[in-house]
Image (cartoon, rainbow, N blue to C red; front, side):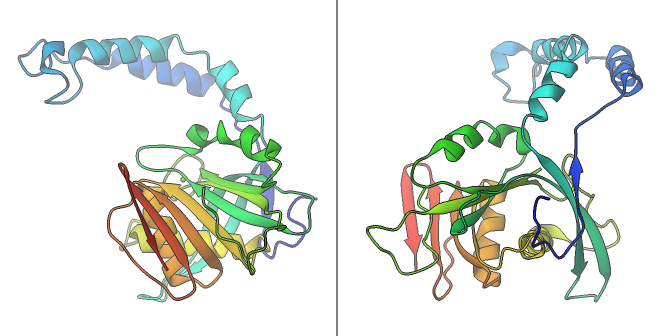
Length: 263
């Protein structure tokens, strides 16, 4: 049974949409009018004022002929799960349980390092799946993988030239994205809330120490996790603007061609 050390409910998940849902989507696309030709939506404007009319027409046509069955099969190539993650808002005391969707691949090596990989905005877990075969076949490091429906990876112990870094990889859908729960609608939630839930998820899966990687919005979440929670031993942020530091934690922020390391 996957995640045998988990302290929260974790159930296998398969992406599956009915014919009715797909037919409804095509009907909505067919009935949705596209704006008339204007100065602002011509292709020669280069999207300066938003998507061009030609781009919108091409997008609608592509969705109407999209082969969802093939895409769905591709999405289901890796094991996916839904975890029920309890949360208490520290500002209000409000209790919630969030359903978090993720791709989760555990490594059999007992020394494997858990890694959470988080997508950005706009984005989804699908854009991270091409990383999986490379991470799984890497001689150093082998990994545990967690990818939520959201490198330099710091070692969890003293560095050694003979150390082989094993990883558990986990990738999630961010709160409010894909198959994860929506964010609360009656109060502020934001990045702090999502980071808190993801840290609780990693702990709930049985990972008391882990590292994080994220791009764009995922980078901000990783930064918060590394600063706020001792379980997060380090974070790699791609396109993360603004430094932050935390004792004993390595943060690496990439923005364009520059790299900032904070100890």
